[in-house]
Length: 82
Image 1 (cartoon, rainbow, N blue to C red):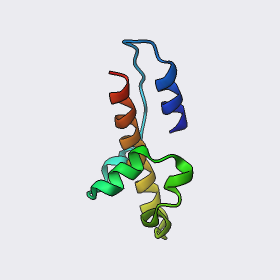
Image 2 (image 1 turned 60 degrees about the vertical axis):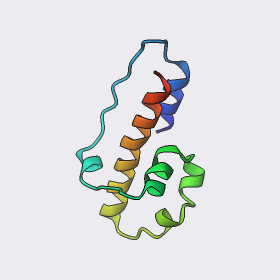
Image 3 (image 1 turned 90 degrees about the horizontal axis):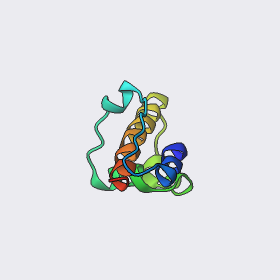
Image 4 (image 1 turned 90 degrees about the vertical axis):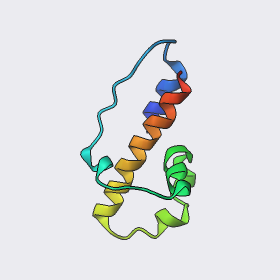
């Protein structure tokens, strides 16, 4: 999501972006606020050290978490542009 963050720094006032995601981002609910916050806001180098992330050992679950993180990060960047 580095691209979305970089776009937010240079987009013109009133500008917009279209981000195409995956339906997998909606197949998995992340309910804990600390998990949502981590996925939405932590820099990648810190997120990879988040204990909950380090414990994932299922490839499908990891993929779904990554896509949910993408969706949450887009939302967190969108509110910065208002």
